[in-house]
Image 1 (cartoon, rainbow, N blue to C red):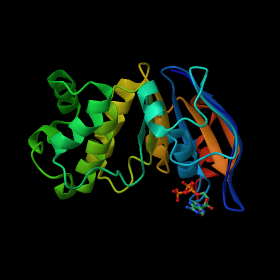
Image 2: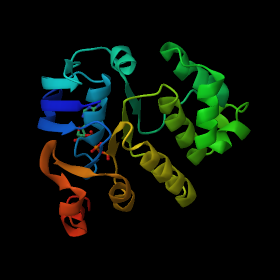
Image 3: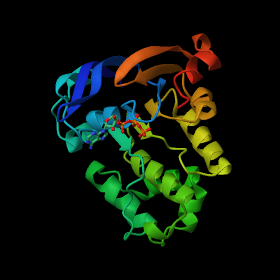
Length: 230
Ligand SMILES: Nc1ncnc2c1ncn2[C@@H]1O[C@H](COP(=O)(O)OP(=O)(O)OP(=O)(O)O)[C@@H](O)[C@H]1O
């Protein structure tokens, strides 16, 4: 599925957080959005997910305008969002978290859950545990699993490696690399090694604006890290 972001503006009151942000993600492509703290990355994902309204511009999924569509409509169209901080249901078990995510998509089947447990074996072991009792890395896997169980066509992730131990970062990298080509991925990331391992293309945000970008082959580490250090 193609995700097109066209001239997007967003304001928090009088403060402008996004300025004429434009890019496109082709079917099966992985685009990483980089930038310092406060650059506007999370704001961008929230606008795409329908959590925050935009002040100008447009968001399209396969050419269909979604700019003012509620979150559930975007989700039904194939857009899945893994927010920063995971936002799983702490009081529900792992299994119930997956069921709650899958049910609106009519994919709450054993086959769908088996597929997820195949990607994240620890979730099978923890299926009966409360989400809130999981470690940070396990919660991140559950958050990703909740998105994937809906069988999305576009997957947006806000800093999936944050506060996660190296072995889980490696697992997430393997999962995302395996998904590439089949679904479109929008990755917001501060961890450059991870972003360069997974992404085909980069967009760099600074103060809410796209200031650089290009294919992985054209973006040297120096060029990318210029916009990453605080
Ligand atoms: N709820 C809010 N109300 C007002 N301003 C906000 C709000 N959330 C974010 N901002 C401001 O908008 C700008 C962009 O923030 P955003 O969180 O999108 O950046 P970010 O690139 O995701 O940073 P981080 O990596 O720290 O999450 C910042 O200047 C921030 O202070």
